[in-house]
Image (cartoon, rainbow, N blue to C red; front, top):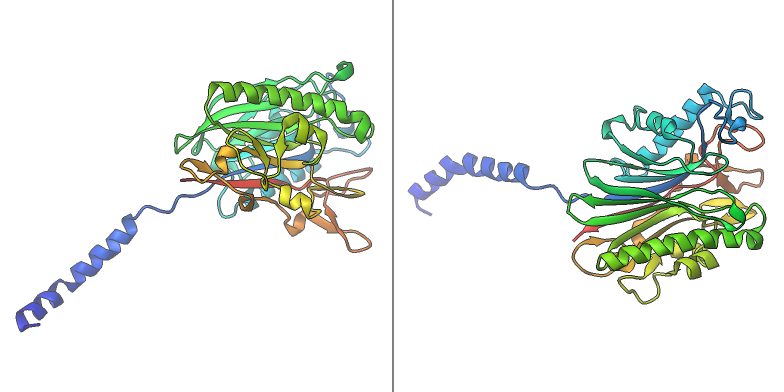
Length: 344
């Protein structure tokens, strides 16, 4: 290198360095995953007596007094879970079971931990006798609602139950996502006696899925909920036709992303043993190696933060619930589940 070239390099070295640094600053950040979660929040009621539903227990004069202070604790706890599940980000979709009405959802979205996200609300009052509904929050910056509707579930004998919430929306990538939020009938009368009720819910959901799949080729389907059944039970495996992702993947079939955890004996709630009632089910096209919306079993999990659990007298972990026969001040008798999606 001659003296003139050396002097030129020395003179312009600061400019080269500044240009390189500017290039780094203007580089596009890596794509963030799209995150959806589901949480049975265990009786998120307001404190007012609604004469149209059986909510007397959740009033200041109820069996376990449900006061404004306890409601606010419940709101703060639920907001904490939503904030922590995808820290430092926030989930794009949040499905719920056991919320009473629009009021408690507005209280939740106004909580300091969530207010900056400006979550939108999708909620319909259902005919459930206890007045508990399913609902969904969405981040309007990452998900645009195109349409929504409650799917009515008619049970054998005419008993009333929760609707299934259907929401069709579009991601920023222009991918269309069909979301279904569920809370199927409980096992209160026993697993076998109550099974026809969950099969009735499965039939309603399956019929809507068939309709969507006729209108749209290989639609992106996300099913979240508390099914009060496990992945291998008849309502899921036969009624809904959802299977293990270890089986051969087909675009329009349904697959339970938490099946591996289920096979390991893990669960989202505890009654005599761990049960996996809270599930994430997707259409097979999102598991295929292709362009578009993508996820995998490694992208789905049960959220098990320490504060969501307590240890019983024998040292075993159980969900840290809000109340049973008395007020415990915990979070819920269910653990939340979540899934991450990427766009290829």
